[in-house]
Length: 503
Image 1 (cartoon, rainbow, N blue to C red):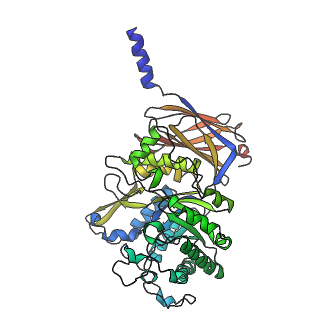
Image 2 (image 1 turned 120 degrees about the vertical axis):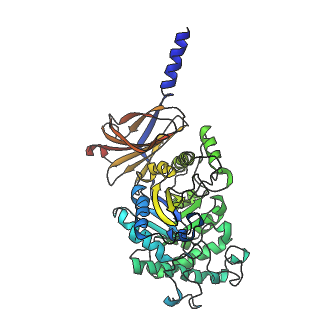
Image 3 (image 1 turned 90 degrees about the vertical axis):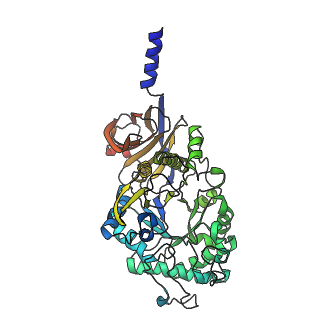
C-alpha cells in the first residue's frame, strides 16, 4: 500500500489542481472600452530635482523618447491625466470675459509645484504621438491639482498651497472658467489638439473642499465658455479619493439639465473606504478567500448610464505594505482590474504615475516603468514586474472594444473578455490565483462558437515575463491550456474572417 500512496502523491504533485472552464458569451456585450492611462502628476521634468536620483536635471530628449515608447507602444496606453499648475500666476486682467494672452505662462518647465501646459504637450502629444496608432483615440485631460493663488480665499497667505487658506474663493467661478478655457484654446491653437475632457479638481474632498453647489457652478461656467468657443471639451467629475466621497455631488450635477450637457464622464479613485484597496496584502487576502474586490458598480452608475456618461476609474495606486513584491502588487491589481471591469462596469482604468525611480520594492506609487539614474544622469528605463502584469490588459484590450461576459465557476480564476471590431480579434485575459497549475478551457458561445482559428498567448508568472508562447489552435470555439500557479495569460484569437459575423 505504501507504493500506492507514493504514486498518488506524485500524481498530485505534478498534476494541475483541476480543470476550469471560462465561458465567453458573445451574445451578452457589455460596456465599450475607452482606454488605459495614468496620472502624470508632475511630468518627467519633476525628476530634475529628485534627491534619490542625485538631482539629475532635465532628462535628455532621446531618453524621453525611450520612456514614452515604453509607455505608449510597449504598454499600449492611450490616456494620460495631467495636473498643470502655475500657468496663470496672477489674474490675467481681473475680467473673466476677456482673455489677456500676456497673463499666461505656457512653457513653465520646472519643479513639481510649477508645471505648466507645454511640457506635458511636448512629451505626450508631440513626442508620445510617434508611438501611438492614429487609428485609436488618445485622451489627454487636465485635472486641477491646486488652485492658482488668486483663486483662493487668501492668496497672500503662506498656507495657500496646501493649508486651509488654499480653499477656493467661490466669487472666482467665472475666473476659473476663463483659466480652463485659456488652456484648452492654447493647446488647440499650438498643438492642433482639442482637449476632450477637463476635470475641475483632482480629489476635491481631499484638499479643494468644494461642495456640490460650487462644483455645479464650476461645471456650468466652464461648460458655457467651452460651448461659446465652439469647443467639444466636456467636464469629468469628480476624480475624488473614493466613489462615495463625491457621490452626492455627481448626482446633484447630473440632476441639472444644462450641466448634463457639459459633463462627459463621471470619475473616481479607489483609495479608502470599505474596499480597502490602498493596501496590497488585504487585497490578496480577499482574493485568496475567493472574495470579489469590487462586486457592483458605483452608486452613481445608474445615473451615468441613464444620461449616457462614461464611468472612469481615473486613478489608483497600491500604497504597498512592507514585505510585498512587485509580483504581489501586479497580481493584486490584475484581480482588481478583472472585478472593476466585470462588476464595476467601468469604461476606463487609470493608474497613478507612469514612471518613477526604481526603489527595489513597491513604494507609495503604482507605476509600470522603472527609471534608473547613475551619477546624477539618466541611465535606463524598463517595464517593471508590476508593469508586466498590467500590460496583459493594457496592451491587448484596445479602445473601442466591447466587453463580453466571461463566466468562471472557480473564484480563484478570474477572466475578462473583449471583442475588437476594427481588427476582428477576441482578447481574453485569465488570472490564476492558485499556487498550483490549473487546466483551463476557454469556450466561446454565440456567433464564434463554430469556427476554429489561431490563438496567440502571452504569459507572466513567477518564472516568465510577458513571454510569447507558441500559438494554439481553437477548435469549435474552444481552446485548452495549462496555467502555471500565480500567473496571468492573455489570449488573442484571430480566427478566419467568416467567424466574426456580428463583431
